[in-house]
Image (tube, rainbow, N blue to C red; front, side, top):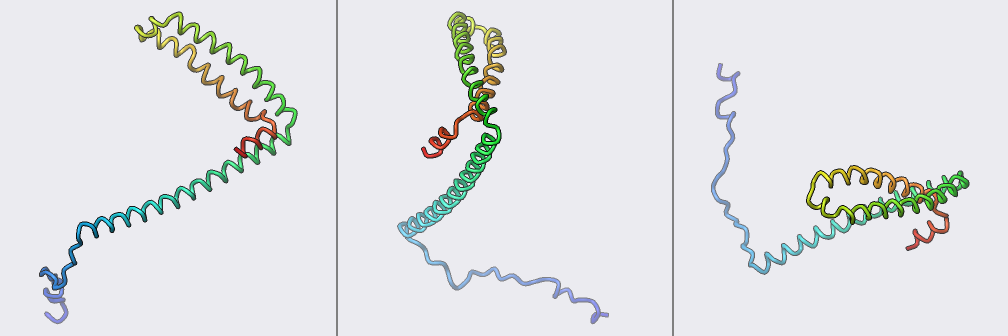
Length: 156
């Protein structure tokens, strides 16, 4: 019966907990600093490599977007011109809107500072419009830029 069942001794392994005969050499403080500096340098090199890869990927994305935008403008030259003209008109509208907004800020300065309700009303009235106007203006300006302006921007 004992020949078919595994023995209890084979179920356990033996672990040596005695100290080893070879101990690691103790580093002096300057050797430890040099080793740490080497590790920092290696980590910095790796960070630089990752940043270069990231920069390459971002440049590739930007180049692709520029090519797609140039292709769109080439396919839709009249619409691109209309976008440019619309951006110019909206830019004037934006200036007038900002003028009205700053006048109201000047006129109601004390109420805006002292009253949270007035500040919230002001933000609710001007904030979304200004954000949307800026977004539309940005899209139109980007779609309406001339190819020469894009080449100049890409070179700088």
